[in-house]
Length: 440
Picture 1 (cartoon, one colour):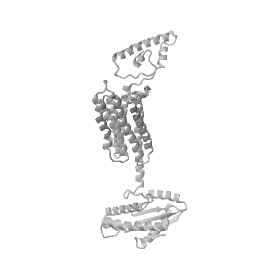
Picture 2 (spheres, helix red, strand yellow):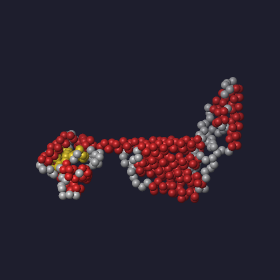
Picture 3 (tube, one colour):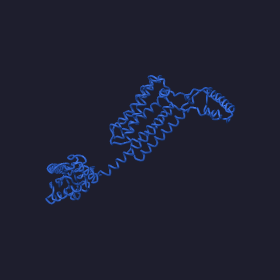
Picture 4 (cartoon, helix red, strand yellow):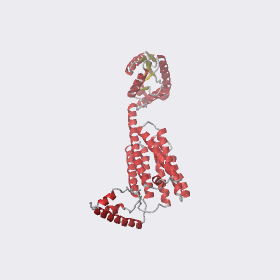
């Protein structure tokens, strides 16, 4: 009997669930309790008459009860979940301040929780100001979602895109306040548009190809479709109860959808940040800190891949060594020496394909290209002249800054063997007076 009082069973109730909110009139609730008491007594008597357990009839009735989802309870659950997820994302940002997108995404979860809570947790229908501000918070949350995606891709322009939706909502609200359908259409268009833009941003402008980022794109597209289709209910209902429930301000069906997609999207954001950090750490291990070009490890890996693809075709190795580099450090200081190293790295970047060169260490650099001896010598001479001009301008003195280059060309060999051949040519260049190219 106590269980029936809690569930609020009704005599001759329809088969489908009856979603009741805390705003139902008190006299109807009292009627529910009276009917439930009558049902429990009848069930008790039928159980006794059948010679079974006194609760037999009651248990039989209980097994056919539909599950009732209370909108108020789901609202509280969603608001708490949004707060937890938002806090988790913001906390992740505090651990690594370079991931500014996490702070924006965390703010988006907090804003959507505040907006939905403010509009649906009051005992009375929401007032003009509550509807204005609550929906503005919800729209602003989608704007923050989009801004976070732009920041994650290192793209500028965040204030105007994030606040445009709220500005449109505030400007139009006084004209559409009396029409729930118009309010639904505008809010759905704005939130759906932001979700679609977020998906486009992560797909079109991705800095790296991250697996979790592709999953986030799918989720954001699903969120965009959900909001846009929900806006259609502001034009015409479908007469399908569970579909039409999405057209209301808040419903158990919509709460369940957001409770499922919210944590999934937050998990993808965290996974994207983890993948980004992993990629950056990997890149840091393969890039020379001073010059910004590939280090010895990265260069040898790229050279090995290139030689594997060439098979019987020739490959040319260029080995560079800056002339009298110690004298530059002694005369002009180590900061000037570091600047000259960066100048030479920029010279290589301007004259060689990406991924074909690197810094081996100190003042020594190398490049491996799919070319023959004649072309290798031509490229080496071009780099030698370009660096002489750039180095002299960098020091702003009458002193010269030059480089000696050794070239070796061979087919079907390993990167280390090709470097040894080029090193012998470089030694001859040094012995011959420096600032020349020697080909073997």
